Image 1: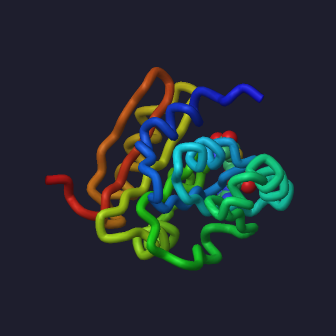
Image 2: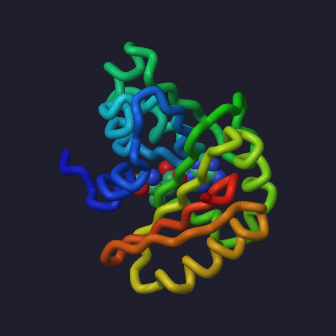
Image 3: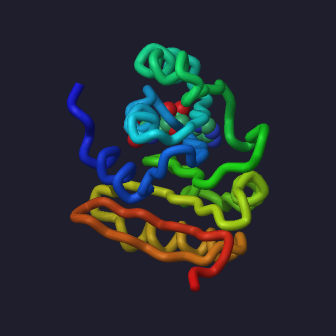
Length: 165
Ligand SMILES: C[S@@+](CC[C@H](N)C(=O)[O-])C[C@H]1O[C@@H](n2cnc3c(N)ncnc32)[C@H](O)[C@@H]1O
């Protein structure tokens, strides 16, 4: 299957370093997860869809066997489990702009290491400014230091736990 441009870009932006710990919220069928683990990252994928988690496990069999990947069925709002993540990310997961994500951002912040970051990616059909403002505002309210990246129609709102030097 061809890799969608949004997922290839997202994984490039994440700048995966071998051994880093990732949590992907709304991992879908595990395409970005596979790219992260191909680069040596260790990833937990969380999704509330049973069929998505099943497909992600099939796609990432070799990464599961190598202990690099782990996929969990569940909704973010029900909890994340272990913390200690270097990077948390989500691609095209709408909860960050369709309502207040304050509770979820609290869970994410608690699950990140002291130098960790949250990346929220979208491929918005012509609504990039609106999404950037809503998601950036929510992350800032949640105590993150926010920067925004654009590449064509792709958007990344990054929230860092510690202000960059
Ligand atoms: C539009 S799909 C995107 C999938 C993948 N990230 C991609 O870009 O191809 C959104 C995914 O997020 C999952 N999702 C949405 N809200 C969620 C939540 N609150 N907790 C966990 N998963 C969620 C959905 O089940 C779905 O698999």
